[in-house]
Length: 291
Image (cartoon, rainbow, N blue to C red; front, side, top):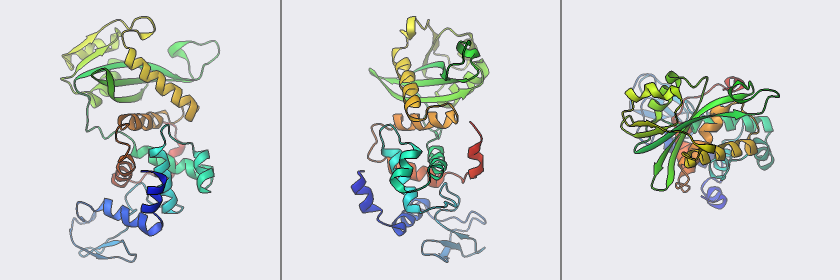
């Protein structure tokens, strides 16, 4: 979708609210309070009111658009720019384009990124590779994992042919078999062929992943060239776009979402809107907590 397509489809507030209602109730109306499937018109044009318990619901309620403090049209613009920009877009640039405060754009962008979180429904199958890395700034006089300004992240990729088709990542506290195993079970099918380095934390996982093999990482990760290229790509993007490791998991979710849909650019905007409609509201004050 080009910017001209977007403007033609969503010229005003009404068109946005109408589209949210279409997405929210595309599988039919069910009252969240009593389960009734019949409704009547509400106080506003696209609201729906339960005929049994009279619960009134708007297209934005119980979604990530709930209680948005500014124009829904501008909220749609933020979703459009975030989803269709090749490398993402900063809150400062959104502020300039839309005439909103930078903090307002930053806060709503956090909601958009929450919609990018993996559903967990599509696990890696076939050939998988897994490795951990540290991400963050350098602390003077300290090296490697003891660096207090860095965070530990584990990444997994799915290899298809000569390339990489999907990737997932997670911030972990330590590279133990417990934390590595939890991540791998969430994103990799247990029948997949999994390749890791010789770190001891992976060895106990062979009981869960029967096709797991461990090989030396090699000089500069030469035995994992695609995985290390993906990791370096993420680190370069992080430095250029976000400049820090605050809210790192959300940045990982954003990067993986965009990477995994690089061949679905025509539908990525609609897919992200639907995810935001299906997601539960998230109190704005919780975004002040680092993750």
